[in-house]
Image 1: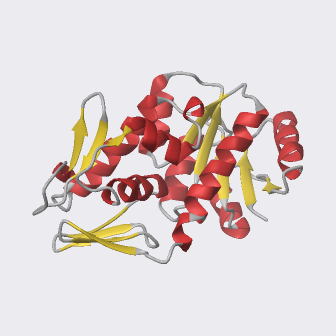
Image 2: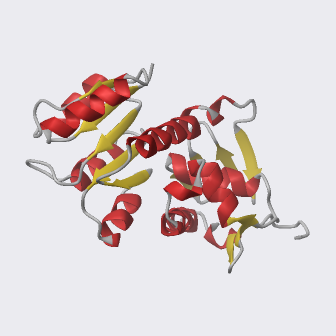
Length: 231
Protein backbone atom coordinates (compact mmCIF):
# COMPACT_ATOMS: atom_id res chain seq x y z
CA UNK A 1 0.00 0.00 0.00
CA UNK A 2 1.49 3.33 -1.10
CA UNK A 3 1.73 6.20 1.39
CA UNK A 4 0.74 9.64 0.14
CA UNK A 5 1.46 12.84 2.05
CA UNK A 6 -1.12 15.53 1.23
CA UNK A 7 0.18 18.99 2.16
CA UNK A 8 -3.07 20.97 1.97
CA UNK A 9 -4.39 23.51 4.48
CA UNK A 10 -8.01 23.50 3.27
CA UNK A 11 -9.51 21.03 5.74
CA UNK A 12 -12.59 20.36 3.61
CA UNK A 13 -10.59 19.65 0.45
CA UNK A 14 -8.08 17.59 2.41
CA UNK A 15 -10.86 15.43 3.82
CA UNK A 16 -12.46 14.93 0.43
CA UNK A 17 -9.19 13.97 -1.29
CA UNK A 18 -8.17 11.66 1.55
CA UNK A 19 -11.53 9.88 1.51
CA UNK A 20 -11.42 9.37 -2.27
CA UNK A 21 -7.81 8.17 -2.27
CA UNK A 22 -8.47 5.77 0.58
CA UNK A 23 -11.10 4.17 -1.66
CA UNK A 24 -8.19 3.38 -4.01
CA UNK A 25 -6.30 1.77 -1.10
CA UNK A 26 -3.80 4.60 -0.59
CA UNK A 27 -2.68 5.59 2.90
CA UNK A 28 -3.07 9.38 3.12
CA UNK A 29 -1.27 11.51 5.70
CA UNK A 30 -1.81 15.20 6.43
CA UNK A 31 0.23 17.92 8.12
CA UNK A 32 -0.41 18.84 11.74
CA UNK A 33 2.04 21.76 11.93
CA UNK A 34 2.77 23.70 8.73
CA UNK A 35 5.98 25.06 10.22
CA UNK A 36 7.33 21.52 10.67
CA UNK A 37 6.60 19.95 7.31
CA UNK A 38 10.05 18.37 6.97
CA UNK A 39 9.86 16.71 10.37
CA UNK A 40 6.50 15.16 9.50
CA UNK A 41 7.77 14.19 6.05
CA UNK A 42 10.74 12.39 7.64
CA UNK A 43 8.44 10.58 10.07
CA UNK A 44 5.96 9.39 7.43
CA UNK A 45 8.46 8.58 4.64
CA UNK A 46 5.76 8.88 1.95
CA UNK A 47 5.94 7.28 -1.49
CA UNK A 48 4.43 10.39 -3.10
CA UNK A 49 3.71 13.97 -2.05
CA UNK A 50 0.72 16.09 -3.12
CA UNK A 51 1.29 19.74 -2.27
CA UNK A 52 -0.54 23.04 -2.63
CA UNK A 53 1.34 26.24 -3.46
CA UNK A 54 -0.46 28.57 -1.07
CA UNK A 55 0.18 27.32 2.45
CA UNK A 56 0.58 28.84 5.94
CA UNK A 57 4.09 29.84 7.05
CA UNK A 58 5.91 28.95 3.82
CA UNK A 59 4.57 28.26 0.33
CA UNK A 60 4.65 24.94 -1.50
CA UNK A 61 7.67 25.97 -3.57
CA UNK A 62 9.69 26.34 -0.37
CA UNK A 63 8.74 22.86 0.83
CA UNK A 64 9.31 21.32 -2.59
CA UNK A 65 12.82 22.78 -2.53
CA UNK A 66 13.42 21.42 0.97
CA UNK A 67 12.11 17.95 0.10
CA UNK A 68 14.22 17.81 -3.07
CA UNK A 69 17.33 18.59 -1.01
CA UNK A 70 16.84 15.31 0.85
CA UNK A 71 14.69 13.02 -1.29
CA UNK A 72 13.75 11.99 -4.83
CA UNK A 73 10.18 11.14 -3.78
CA UNK A 74 7.72 12.10 -6.55
CA UNK A 75 5.94 15.42 -5.99
CA UNK A 76 2.71 16.58 -7.61
CA UNK A 77 1.49 20.16 -7.14
CA UNK A 78 -2.23 20.86 -6.70
CA UNK A 79 -3.00 24.56 -7.10
CA UNK A 80 -5.76 26.99 -8.03
CA UNK A 81 -3.09 29.32 -9.43
CA UNK A 82 -3.10 29.13 -13.22
CA UNK A 83 -0.18 31.31 -14.29
CA UNK A 84 2.26 29.41 -16.57
CA UNK A 85 5.19 30.53 -14.42
CA UNK A 86 3.80 28.51 -11.50
CA UNK A 87 3.96 25.31 -13.55
CA UNK A 88 7.42 26.17 -14.86
CA UNK A 89 8.65 26.98 -11.35
CA UNK A 90 7.33 23.68 -9.99
CA UNK A 91 9.10 21.70 -12.74
CA UNK A 92 12.34 23.62 -12.22
CA UNK A 93 12.22 22.79 -8.52
CA UNK A 94 11.96 19.08 -9.32
CA UNK A 95 8.21 18.44 -9.17
CA UNK A 96 6.89 15.57 -11.27
CA UNK A 97 3.57 17.07 -12.26
CA UNK A 98 1.18 20.02 -11.77
CA UNK A 99 -2.62 19.76 -11.52
CA UNK A 100 -4.76 22.88 -11.55
CA UNK A 101 -7.73 23.16 -9.20
CA UNK A 102 -10.56 22.46 -9.60
CA UNK A 103 -9.80 19.08 -11.11
CA UNK A 104 -11.68 15.90 -11.91
CA UNK A 105 -10.81 13.29 -9.34
CA UNK A 106 -10.30 10.72 -12.10
CA UNK A 107 -7.51 12.91 -13.49
CA UNK A 108 -5.82 13.08 -10.09
CA UNK A 109 -5.94 9.30 -9.68
CA UNK A 110 -4.65 8.74 -13.22
CA UNK A 111 -1.70 11.04 -12.62
CA UNK A 112 -0.92 9.46 -9.25
CA UNK A 113 -1.03 5.97 -10.75
CA UNK A 114 1.12 6.95 -13.73
CA UNK A 115 3.69 8.64 -11.49
CA UNK A 116 3.90 5.71 -9.09
CA UNK A 117 4.33 3.24 -11.97
CA UNK A 118 7.00 5.40 -13.56
CA UNK A 119 8.94 5.87 -10.35
CA UNK A 120 8.65 2.48 -8.70
CA UNK A 121 8.11 -0.07 -11.48
CA UNK A 122 10.86 0.50 -14.03
CA UNK A 123 13.65 0.24 -11.46
CA UNK A 124 12.86 -3.45 -11.06
CA UNK A 125 14.27 -4.21 -14.53
CA UNK A 126 17.29 -6.51 -14.62
CA UNK A 127 19.47 -3.94 -16.38
CA UNK A 128 20.17 -1.01 -14.05
CA UNK A 129 23.36 0.36 -15.68
CA UNK A 130 23.93 1.70 -19.17
CA UNK A 131 27.04 3.12 -20.83
CA UNK A 132 26.39 6.15 -22.99
CA UNK A 133 28.96 8.48 -24.55
CA UNK A 134 31.62 7.34 -22.09
CA UNK A 135 29.33 7.89 -19.10
CA UNK A 136 27.69 5.36 -16.79
CA UNK A 137 23.95 5.87 -16.39
CA UNK A 138 22.60 4.28 -13.21
CA UNK A 139 18.84 3.82 -13.39
CA UNK A 140 18.59 2.79 -9.74
CA UNK A 141 20.66 5.60 -8.24
CA UNK A 142 19.38 8.20 -10.77
CA UNK A 143 22.92 9.31 -11.59
CA UNK A 144 25.11 9.89 -14.62
CA UNK A 145 28.87 9.64 -14.10
CA UNK A 146 31.90 10.26 -16.29
CA UNK A 147 35.42 11.65 -15.87
CA UNK A 148 33.99 15.12 -15.23
CA UNK A 149 32.02 13.97 -12.19
CA UNK A 150 28.52 12.80 -11.24
CA UNK A 151 25.14 14.46 -11.54
CA UNK A 152 21.92 13.39 -9.83
CA UNK A 153 18.72 13.38 -11.84
CA UNK A 154 15.08 13.45 -10.79
CA UNK A 155 12.82 10.49 -11.56
CA UNK A 156 11.41 12.29 -14.59
CA UNK A 157 14.84 13.22 -15.90
CA UNK A 158 16.34 9.74 -15.56
CA UNK A 159 13.27 8.25 -17.22
CA UNK A 160 13.47 10.66 -20.15
CA UNK A 161 17.18 9.90 -20.54
CA UNK A 162 16.45 6.17 -20.33
CA UNK A 163 13.84 6.39 -23.09
CA UNK A 164 16.24 8.35 -25.30
CA UNK A 165 19.38 6.25 -24.86
CA UNK A 166 17.46 2.98 -25.22
CA UNK A 167 16.70 4.25 -28.72
CA UNK A 168 19.99 6.12 -29.22
CA UNK A 169 20.56 7.73 -32.60
CA UNK A 170 16.84 7.48 -33.32
CA UNK A 171 14.28 10.23 -32.94
CA UNK A 172 11.89 9.71 -30.03
CA UNK A 173 8.79 11.80 -30.71
CA UNK A 174 7.40 14.22 -28.17
CA UNK A 175 4.14 12.26 -28.25
CA UNK A 176 5.95 9.02 -27.40
CA UNK A 177 7.78 10.66 -24.50
CA UNK A 178 4.62 12.25 -23.13
CA UNK A 179 2.65 9.02 -23.39
CA UNK A 180 5.43 7.01 -21.74
CA UNK A 181 5.84 9.53 -18.93
CA UNK A 182 2.25 10.33 -18.16
CA UNK A 183 0.32 7.49 -19.83
CA UNK A 184 -2.19 9.82 -21.43
CA UNK A 185 -1.13 12.98 -23.25
CA UNK A 186 -4.48 14.63 -22.51
CA UNK A 187 -3.37 15.03 -18.90
CA UNK A 188 -0.09 16.87 -19.53
CA UNK A 189 0.97 20.02 -21.36
CA UNK A 190 3.58 20.05 -24.09
CA UNK A 191 5.42 22.76 -22.19
CA UNK A 192 6.00 20.46 -19.20
CA UNK A 193 8.02 18.04 -21.36
CA UNK A 194 10.11 20.93 -22.70
CA UNK A 195 10.90 22.11 -19.17
CA UNK A 196 11.98 18.60 -18.11
CA UNK A 197 14.21 18.08 -21.16
CA UNK A 198 15.84 21.51 -20.75
CA UNK A 199 16.51 20.78 -17.08
CA UNK A 200 18.02 17.41 -18.03
CA UNK A 201 20.29 19.07 -20.61
CA UNK A 202 21.43 21.68 -18.09
CA UNK A 203 22.53 18.97 -15.66
CA UNK A 204 24.24 16.98 -18.41
CA UNK A 205 26.13 20.14 -19.40
CA UNK A 206 28.10 19.71 -16.17
CA UNK A 207 29.46 16.49 -17.70
CA UNK A 208 29.78 18.08 -21.17
CA UNK A 209 26.97 15.81 -22.38
CA UNK A 210 24.13 18.28 -22.83
CA UNK A 211 24.93 18.63 -26.53
CA UNK A 212 24.38 14.87 -26.95
CA UNK A 213 20.63 15.38 -26.53
CA UNK A 214 19.46 17.06 -29.73
CA UNK A 215 16.11 18.64 -30.50
CA UNK A 216 14.52 17.71 -33.80
CA UNK A 217 12.15 20.60 -34.45
CA UNK A 218 8.59 19.46 -34.99
CA UNK A 219 9.52 15.84 -34.24
CA UNK A 220 11.11 15.14 -30.87
CA UNK A 221 14.52 14.43 -29.35
CA UNK A 222 17.48 12.18 -30.10
CA UNK A 223 20.29 10.90 -27.87
CA UNK A 224 23.48 10.84 -29.88
CA UNK A 225 25.91 7.96 -29.42
CA UNK A 226 29.40 9.04 -30.44
CA UNK A 227 31.09 6.76 -32.92
CA UNK A 228 27.87 5.23 -34.29
CA UNK A 229 25.93 6.02 -37.41
CA UNK A 230 22.65 7.93 -37.01
CA UNK A 231 19.36 7.12 -38.67
